[in-house]
Amino acid sequence: GHHAGKHFHSVTDGPSPAGSQPARCRFGKSHYTRLPEPTMAYDALVIGGGLAGCSTALQLAREGHDVLLAEQSTYPRQKLCGEFLSPEAQSSFRRLSVLNDVHAAGAETIDQARLTTSSGAATSQALPDAALGFSRYHLDQLLFQNASTTRTEDRPGTRVLDVRVILQFVFLP
Image (cartoon, rainbow, N blue to C red; front, side, top):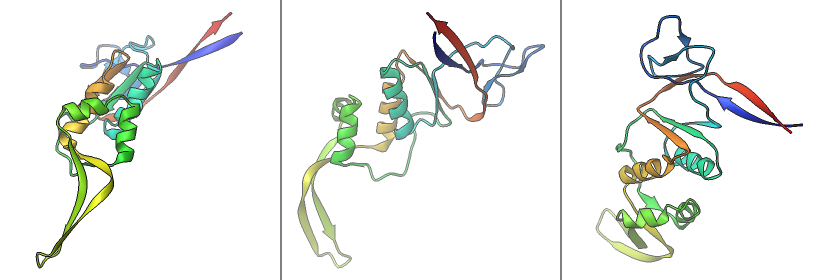
């Protein structure tokens, strides 16, 4: 027969209960669960809630996977970034179905580049395709919120210290 696998990661907040051991998937400094019964099951654990992590969690959740998204920072957060969304980035956001949210949150169209020398001389040139200007401060939060769907459990402010995976197989007829 065929079998379907599910990765189980035990995660429980709080102090170590009497007779407990560290969780199979430990987050932060005081997350423990009783063994051997896992408390939560996930198909995927995504560590890092930046652009790549949130995009990955969002895609996995939309494909029907149960996802745990762990990010050591909290949102919103300041991040040094040029805040320039190229046409290629917009295409990625369109595939993730978040481009309309980016526009609605106040993204500005950028269709020209302007170069200025230290002496004040300047030149402008039209860009081949329009880009967007959008605060990374808001972009990270917007993506994290979109990734936090019913199939994704989000854990902002969580630093992953250790991951232990248990595979459970269910045999199907």
